[in-house]
Amino acid sequence: MIEQVPTLAQLVKQLQQVPYLASKNVYRVAHYFLTLDQKRMQQLCKILLEAQENVIPCQICFVWKEKDRNCAYCDSPRKDRSTICVVETWQELMAIEKTGGYHGVYHLLGGAICPLNGIGPENLTIDQLVKRMSSEIKEIILATNQTPEGEATASYIAAKLKDWPLKITCLARGIPVGSSLEYMDRVTVFKALSERRLF
Image (cartoon, rainbow, N blue to C red; front, side, top):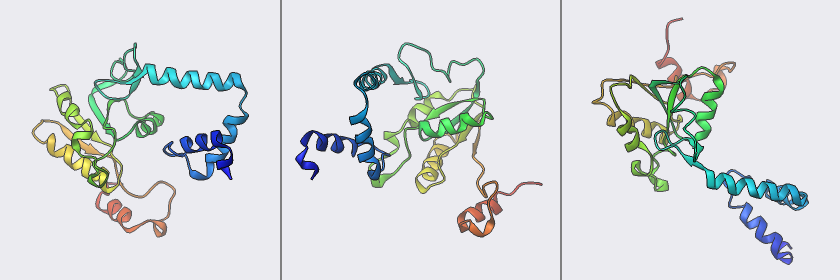
């Protein structure tokens, strides 16, 4: 039926290519755009084009920054440059920042090693992380996701940095606050037991 309206079919087809947009919401989003008043639509399109033109990855940590400005993380006087937190994506960085408990700098990998998807170490910013190493760096926090790909990526990075005199740590693993043991999977329970600490 949608083929009877070719322009709408094209819009839906483009929306289906947007990652993370659930297929059940494609028609709702299409409806939203079609009913948006022209001034707001032009403003949205203008902002999207400006963002694509002016927002680039920092050449040191690979976090998004304005093209004509310094990196908000690398150049902040409030950040401790002796600690680097390594994350897979910008979304994980934002989750850590929201806690307000981390005061070091970051390194964004751009994903995780996943040979099945054709992503090897050369497709990530691991070599650039190694180039960042200096006597100033005291700790690397491997904050990759607790997935097979994230674990493999963390192990690969740890092996690459083994000759540097620094502390390599990872995020604590185990039972989330407020949850019950009976609902946890066995790997989570095992990690919680094996990485227990003094009470």
